[in-house]
Length: 597
Image (cartoon, rainbow, N blue to C red; front, side, top):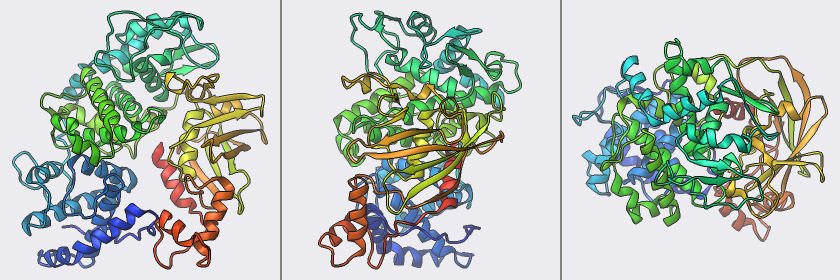
């Protein structure tokens, strides 16, 4: 057992009920685990503390998903999700040590008969760490899929229906195709684009009679009758492939047309030296958009996405398989926070990936070894020469490919301030001017520690100005649809210093942000976004807006306040812990933003 070379890392104070439960659960098993570890030959000094700390990291991630009270059994699907979250949140060297430590902890539970779950669950959890012959990996190593040869991986990727669709749409675009002012294909072009990805659909005028539109994932990707749609975004498969091409830098979208970038040659020319890397990265970008990129407009979407990420991660590691019947098990779904609707969405999502050739569902969820690198790249695990860190936003794949950006662009220094906060809460960000408003939404969510649980919009020009936001049938609430936030860049809207736009999150709490352009800076290839400064803690989600948050801060810090105990419990604060609204860790945020891209 190798000691974590970074030593025991100080963890943040408990800030939620789930994390408090995790602390108590780990404390309950720590003495027995410590006694067992002390019998291990050659245990380095200080390693015991690191091992227990690692169990705490997993427990914290796991308890956010499952209302458990102990760490002596794990639901396999939630365990895979928790491991995915750990892999995305920790530095590479920390992640490797944590994985080895968790495997050691599982061995402790098995050998001491401390495991309280079923043996089937234990065996399934162990598949993340063991080879097919049930022998543990060498100490200090995490078992990843055996890397196929370049020819094997290329053949496997090229043979999928997904790769065919991606290439076909690029070929259809040709030199260029006309688009609307929002960056979507014009109605007359939808039929050809749909055919390129195996769909039968036609664009119609806004007053045309609308046919029934199938859901985000359907049982068949090739409907027999033409669909009459009023925007390309009513065809989710086409919309996701379009987003993958644009986000990966394979197409550029202007005010009147879309055209392929020089990077597209690496996809279309099979003899190109970057063909494998480009294909792997483009497919990973699609998978990232498909799994984690659906707008969260219903309560069952996020649990389904998280469960799917855990499933794919587990299935891609060392050829692990998870029985398909678990997707139908109400108890399993409930333990992952999924209701009937989330379970149905999860199954449909997995069927779509099967039809696209990414997984097989013949009794178990499987990812063939030659596709594992691509799947793990999409989910943020670093593997071989194609790894990345953290779930990717559209637009981040160029870095993973090693391909140059389409063209150098200026950087923008922005001040993003939450209005009416006392003390002031703001962030100074330096980012690429070609990032879209959709990406800016994710950056703001990360910057203020929001959880993207509510609606949002951007506004340019004030009350009678232009509104941007997510578009599509799932966002049609009877109001005029906003302009597509994924089709406009920051550089298109902010062109001179002191210009500003607004961003509103959660129309109930009404968190209004003013985004001001402070400086235009010369191009730099990396990072795509970084934090250059800031002030103040991000207000807690659902705390009632600026006035409500001020009341929460006052209550938790004043023992005489009538809501003191209630709000401390709500925030999961420990005894003696204070809340400082001025607290801000620039370096920590900078690291998180870098991992996004």
